[in-house]
Image 1 (tube, rainbow, N blue to C red):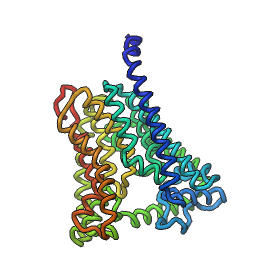
Image 2 (cartoon, rainbow, N blue to C red):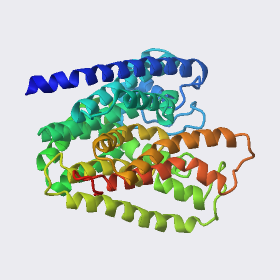
Image 3 (tube, rainbow, N blue to C red):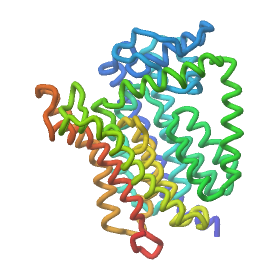
Image 4 (cartoon, rainbow, N blue to C red):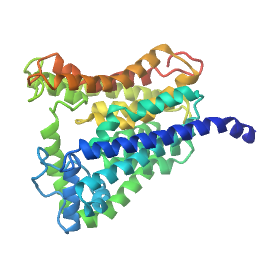
Length: 413
């Protein structure tokens, strides 16, 4: 039986291998082009981490106040992420950015391969080529290469956690989630899944890994560095950027709509209502996620209800985060792929339409921004709040698409 299954999968595996190989070549070409023609000379978003890594090499606190990265004045990234940059600080920042992007490309390809290997979707070669082309040119990935972001590595860690959990390795699942949360804080919200379902070994694996990695990084960062990060740098960075035009979380939308900035004119100047509306929005999104989790609390791991809850939390946590940028959308490739694999065998119109809209909206934002950048600023409503916040609408639509995940009999969940 296993030999027959392997024989049946062999042609599909060859197509997947070819598609991923083509994606590697195309993305590597894009990375080199972006680094040589479009990337900022100081490294863009990489600049802060690069300077902090130099401080670590000099035996200094990485979270001291600094200047020299343009409009970037605070270090929002946790200590573990800074330590990954230390080897790259030994080379010029432009070379460091290219090496980092190639490392992230390897993480992206590994993620896609593991997703396919876990789901084995019955997808025709033509559709597979189309999917590879869409991934190659997806705007969040282009933003990732431009700013040397860590999204593909976070995606890989979430894929590894999801795969380990499905294969009956709860301690490993918790460990991978903990590493993701130590690199970027927002994945900690995914621990709501094992907490609601009482998967205590997953929680334990995350706790042990988190404590162990923090203990390992403490000698390099220092107690003072941790204190500076949590009491000054992370809060100051959030306060500085929370109303930025490119913040596509729920809080970002409200800030743009009712406070505005130097890019977007608000619908109305009403900053007093932002926090109450945010609280209501957080309650609504959290209630939807928790409702799905509660319904799935007794379902077997890997079942329809369990998968829907797991994948729905991923876009929901970006909506709930104070800050979310379009390049965070790299992690959406996991829930999008899982829902797409289901739709390949159990077609359902409304989730399919919502999935397509959620994928397309980042392109609409990119084209819209190209058109609007030639216009005077700040952009009047509704142009500014509509075009800049298209990825926020994509998060809402993808969340709803996952909520309506088709059940095994083809009906809507």
